[in-house]
Amino acid sequence: MTLSRIAPRVTLGVFVVAVSASAVAPASTATASHEARNIKPSHEARNIKSSHEAGSIKFTSKRLKGGLIECASENPGLAAFLTRDIAKSLKNRASKASVVLYDRTTHTSCTYGADKHYDSASIVKPIILGALLLDRGVHLSKDERDLARQMIVSSDNDATYTLWDSVGPKNIQNFLDKAGMKNTVLDDAGFMGLTQVTARDQAKLLELLTAKGNSVLNAEERSYVLGLMRDVQKDQRWGTPAAAPSDAAVQVKNGWLQRSETGLKDPWDRGDWKVNSMSAITGRAYDYGLVVLTENNRVPEGESPEVGWDYGMDTVEGVAKAIHHDLHADRTPPATGNPSL
Image (tube, rainbow, N blue to C red):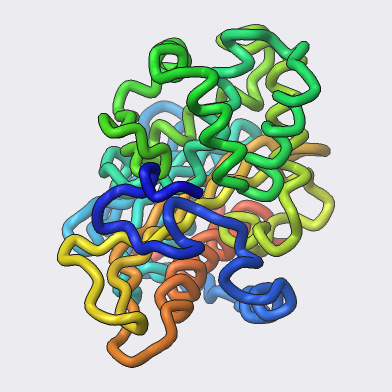
């Protein structure tokens, strides 16, 4: 990677915008430290701020750290459980986080800080691929297909910048416009990992990729993107897939970078980690998507830089485990759908 592509205040070395997880720690270490920890969230319902109904839809909300967690569902009680458990998963985390969930099967949605902007890191890469396909169709050259696979499956930055330059910002912006991703802002200096994204816009992208019909991208083009996300290498399948149903197809893209607003202090205090994850869960009876974006994952002074990265992953996975459990636990929410409001 050339220094000309590195943005100011972004940590140099292997973590510039988003690199493969294996560059941070051996795959065995990353896998071992981020396996599901058999967390069994309690389902004693409590502390839901408010609840109301509109037709067949149940709405609940709860204020957390100055923001509002809002869930809605046709499934009685599910909105309340999700609201409570998302709040519990984030309550004691120092990370700043945003969450968007949609589930077409249960007609359920949740949002928390959905329109807050974050540095994208590598979750911009499916956008670049979408723009490439919109511009040229699915019949790409062998070189383009090789680059696309490297970009998505192993999160290779050199391959990404080759495609970024080939597609060009006008075509990328055209894709964003057609996808309705109005709050996604490309970096003026051309640093792909500093694209400003929101959880709501990234969820729109997942919905687009898993939709039926030929909106923006046709079925073959969408299948191509999802296929690469389904093939993401093992050591990068952390985050939102944590505790997803074992019989589901999981399409994932993660992103991570260090970027300090005050610059580097020393090699062991490298500033604020941005850790983002998005997944589309499909197959069988599953048709839902989850986006969790985080920042302020700090490295304590004197600690290894990996500590901040690890903390961000744990924050994302805490939210994911709570949501997957609520959607697919072997239980039925109370018929009233109004637990201890």
